[in-house]
Amino acid sequence: MQFIQPDHNKSGQVMPKDISTIVSMPDEVKGVLKKACYDCHSNNTDYPWYTYVQPIHWFINYHIKSGKDELNFNEFGIYTPRRQQNKLRAIESSLKEGTMPLWSYTLIHRNAILSEAEKSLIIDWVQSSKDSLNKKANSSVH
Image (cartoon, rainbow, N blue to C red; front, top):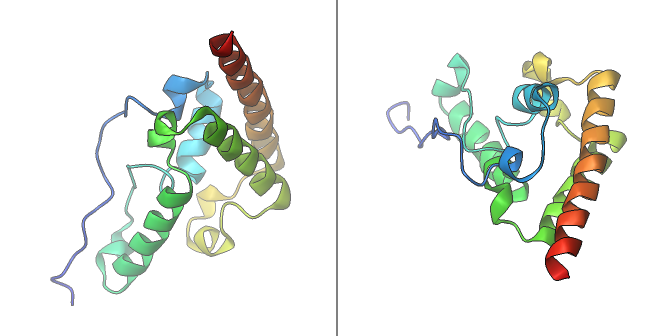
C-alpha cells in the first residue's frame, strides 16, 4: 500500500488565471489565503510528512480534490463572472458562519485557524473585490 502513491497537487507555478490576476489582492490577504486556504483550494499543496503514509495520503487527496472542485484560486479566471461573484460570496459566508477552514483540517493544521482580524481582513477584501468585479462586468456590457 505504501508503494502506491497518488499524484501530488503541486504545479510550482503562478497560474495565469489565479485570483490575484483577476482582482486586486494585498500581500496581507494573499498571505492569509496561502496559509489557511491554498493547500486545499489551489494547484499547490504543501504536504506535511505524514501525508506520505497510506491511507492518510488518499484521505488528504480526497479533501484536496473536493476543495478544488468547490473553489480553485489558481483557476478563478476560468470561472464566469457570475460564478466568480458566487465564489466570493461563498468565501464571505463561510468565514462569517465559521464553516471554513474545516475543523477537521485545523485539528492538525493549527496555523490555518484564522483570527477575527484575519477573518475581517478577508471579508473586507471579498466585499471590495465583489464591487470591483461588478464594475468590470457593467463596463464590459456597455
